[in-house]
Image (cartoon, rainbow, N blue to C red):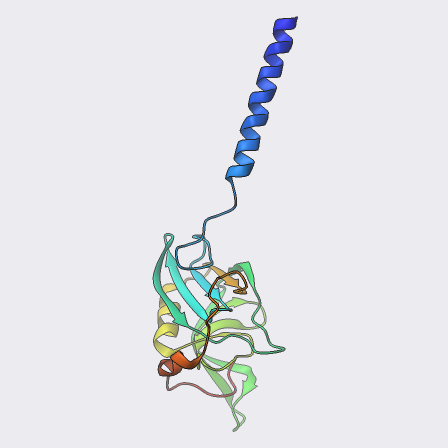
Length: 183
C-alpha cells in the first residue's frame, strides 16, 4: 500500500508542477512587432499614438499610418473583439450633414462597431465623432485589404510606450475629401 501511496504522491507533484509551469509560461498572446495588437488582428489602432496598421499572418503589411479618432464626448470605442461587418466605398452619413444639408461623405468606409464606427477617408489631424480618419490612400488600402469578418483591435494607447504624439508632423497627410461634418 505504501508503494501505491508514494506513486500517487509522485504523480500529484508531477501534475501540479506541470500546471504551475504552464500558468507562469502563458502571459497571453504576443503582440505583433511595432504594434500594441495581437496577430489575431487584421487591423490595429493605437489611439494614444494616433496610428494604425494593417496586419496579415502576424506581420505588419501597412503602417504605422496617421489617424484621428473620436474627440471629447465622442470617443472611439476600445476593445479586442471588433469585427468588420460592412464596407461601403461611397458611404454618405445620414447622421452628419454638410452645411448645405446634404449627407456628409465618408469615402472608403469599413464599419467595425455598432453606431456607424468605421475606418474612412477624412482628415487625420482632426478629431472625428468616433470613427477612425485615415488619409485617402490609407483609407483605400484599409478598404481593399479588410474583409467582412476580419478582426479589429482598438487600443487606448496608455501602455504603448509612445509618449510623443504631437500632431505637427502629420500635416502632409491631408486629402482632398475632408469635410468638417463627417464622422
